[in-house]
Length: 127
Image 1 (cartoon, rainbow, N blue to C red):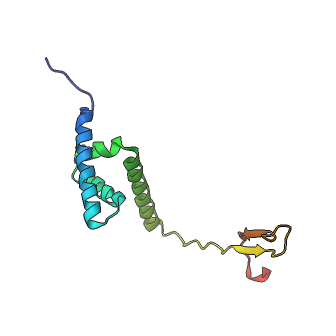
Image 2 (image 1 turned 45 degrees about the vertical axis):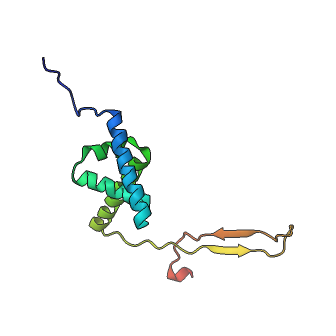
Image 3 (image 1 turned 45 degrees about the horizontal axis):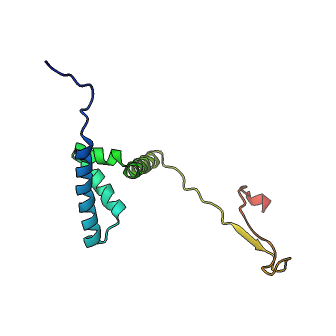
């Protein structure tokens, strides 16, 4: 008789652990030899796995919350960059903070220190 499986066939956890260990070893070696950040190497491993549709690499990334979070961050950042290219957003300039300080005060450290922002746009006639 045939046994029909819905969806993707589950891989054994041992296979995911073995593939993960091999990839971690490769990433550690490249990190040691090339002095490249481990996060960058794992991003590269993830991109290669996605480009060539290597299911084992994808399973390792999906099973590790740290790697999955990095993947989501990269995908969201890329989507935002694509959106910005399509929409041509204006560059937003934030005002510089205004720092004030009272040298004399109740304590040996001095008086109060403040950092404020002026978020209201001033028109030329209000200056």
